[in-house]
Image 1: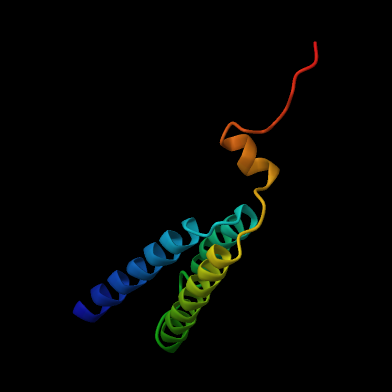
Image 2 (image 1 turned 30 degrees about the vertical axis):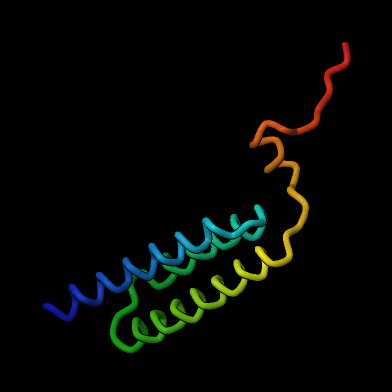
Length: 98
């Protein structure tokens, strides 16, 4: 029973780490893709047990490392803000004519 609770704790910890890391991605498109990908990946492996759960956990750890590298690359080479981001921050640059 203790093994199951440790396993569940590790899965929740990985889920939180992936979401936390995906929220720090600079580019809006990559950020929203990463958040969707995390949710879909965990939903897909929700009922995994035994060896399948171990493999899924290993893949999740690898994806966390990939996401960290992607975030770092995004910070080193920033792109222009998308229209959604600029509008969200209130600097859309839309001039009303009237």
